[in-house]
Length: 161
Image (tube, rainbow, N blue to C red; front, side, top):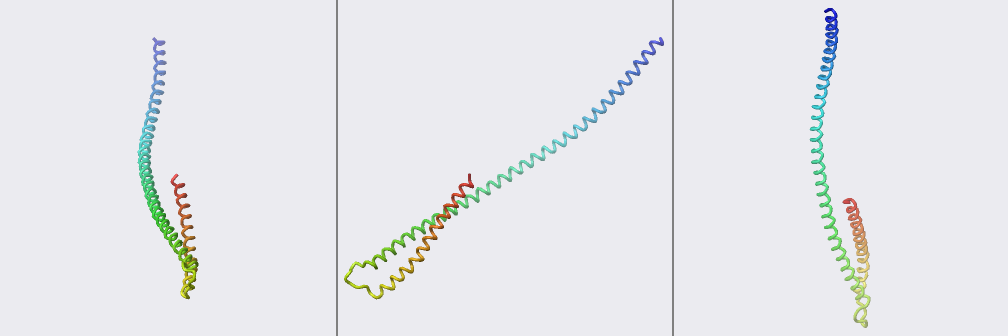
């Protein structure tokens, strides 16, 4: 019986050591589970925060795009209005130039060659020559404005792409 008692005692001490090891493992696993649960809660909160930020950024981007679209539309409307005004101005200038050229021709080549020009005609010719300078300047300004407008439209088209 002593042998049997010694064997049981030895088995008992081995089992006690095994129980202590199992308790230590269980406690370590319980601590790890708590740590993982805390990390999971942190990750869940972070995920919710990121989702809210993503939604806020998407909303802000949409508002920015809408604002840019409105600005582009406004700019295009202004360009269209200026283009119409420029075309109208160019048409008026062309008509005035044509009228002025016709007046100059009439003064230079009157219908009745036998009659001499009246003294009043010479100041008119001087006035016509003086008004031709501003007309030419206006035509040059209109041409420059047209070129500038075309460049602005090209730049706007590039920005839209």
